Image 1 (cartoon, helix red, strand yellow):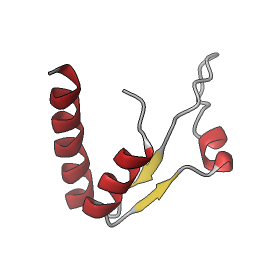
Image 2: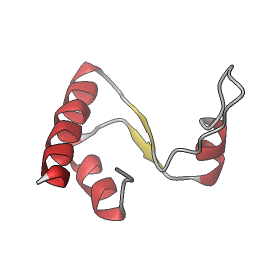
Image 3: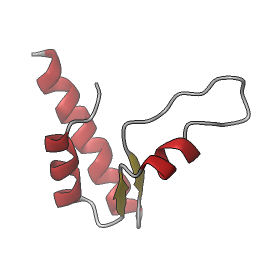
Image 4: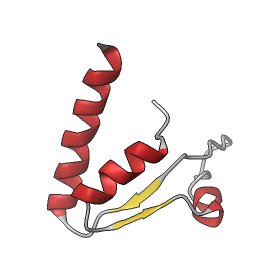
Amino acid sequence: MIPTKDHTKEIKKIFKGEVSQDPQDLEKYSKDASLFQIKPALVVRPQNSKDLSALVIWAIGARKNNQG
């Protein structure tokens, strides 16, 4: 699933940390120690464990809705 602008708005409502679609952030997080480069559609930086939990719950719901 590729996050849309609506997804970004939904995530920002439940998330206190940073949500970014800034091209510099997307480029920065597209690389790791492997040979592969995959550019993310969205970068999130949780502020706390509640942010992480909320994001996982949102992702599960979004995935279920996408499958139906």
